[in-house]
Image (cartoon, rainbow, N blue to C red; front, side, top):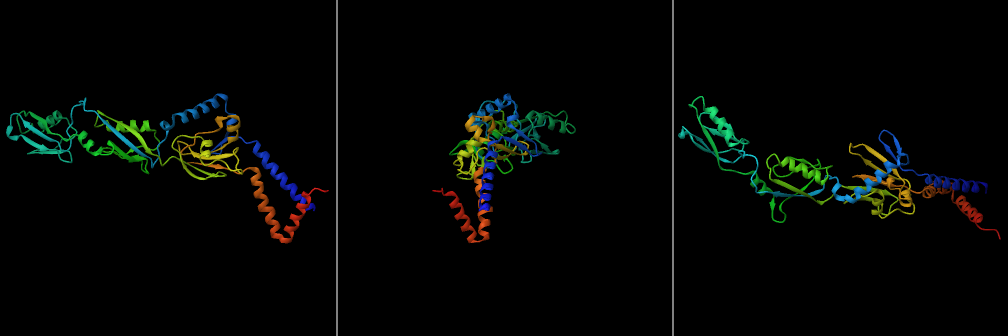
Length: 360
């Protein structure tokens, strides 16, 4: 009898201890070096900045979304037919006329080879691609000056293979017009016509647009692009613990930890909102664990304790103190009695029933 009362007292004390431990929950952040910072310790000014930052991210939505491998993008090209400001430079497959003013018998019409060169009698190969016609004429004149008396050479483009035409052929398709659908690869790059890989992962849409225009500017001054998100595969959060539907969830826009948990169906009766943990990585790929008291966010509007969920974060909703106590009782009390035998278990149940029955 005394043992039974002893067990009941231990169970009650444990449950109360776990329950009151949860009441003192505090939002903290732990870095890889073990440093722990409590949100309560930051100034009111900093708290206000955090609130404004969260609201700004939510309101701007897709504009601040950081692209990830697997995201599909549509790059739309806007080509202007206005004259380019720079002089034309000879390209591969251009057909050029090389005229010797005083020696017309040496005139040639040649096509620039894939290696960017043309071949002339006596002197061999000349690099033509990338040069202006006037520059190539000067190079040829200087080269022949040792065998010709003051040669004057003029280079004109007879048929040109414009990079604009080449680009148009590469990007034009029936359903999308002048556009290209690309997917960010595992290396974080996208690959567009006439360009090497362009880093896309970690950039916003506007940042990627500027990077693409900068790369094309080496060859085109009359080109602009627009970038649209076709689908998002990389931005997601992994939610588990005491929630209705644990698992990975795609995030089509910035959302807070509280919003992400709501997306999973909310917290079970056995779940605790005051010690939710989120594991994430910062811009320098350093891991952080943040313990968030979402009860304070819900009940006291302490928005500075919530955060915008970074890409590929892991969110864990723990059990309540009572739920943990129930598991403890089941594992250490009930199982212990079962181990001692069926009679001990029945006797213990009978005594508990008798103690719970009021005396008449």
